[in-house]
Amino acid sequence: MAWMHLSAILPLMLVVLLASAGIEDVRRREIANWKNGLIALLAPCWWYVSGLALFPDVAMQAIFAAVIFGLFLIPFAMGQMGGGDVKLIGALSLWLPLAALEQMLIVMSLAGGALTLLIMADRWRLKKPGPPEIPYGVAIVVAGLIAAREPIFNHFA
Image (cartoon, rainbow, N blue to C red):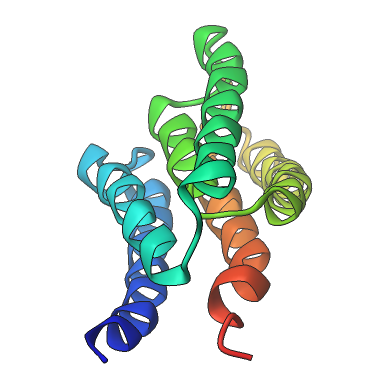
């Protein structure tokens, strides 16, 4: 019976942590390591209460998350993305099965592009010099919540 409560509490905790990360990124242009760490640490709890088998399910989740994290280290190394954003993508990848992960990446890129255009237009309107700082965590959060709706929030059906 306690596991039933945990299967309802974990998605709620994910939503709160994601919303908090997005708000923090807008306000401070950074995402606290403890938030990304907690999202990552809660994923194995989610795997357990969801009944994922150690192999191949959990192994695949970990491999996909490691690959995604590794791929996003490239834009980080080039100075095009913040470390908190990369860690958030990696942590969130631990929660999502492949189809939802693909959806997250597509929505994230579209939302991030739209956010970038809005911020650039505002900077142009205000005639602010220099490159813009994009709170890309907002795009990650929006995409993560959209992608998680079926495998995580609607798993009770």
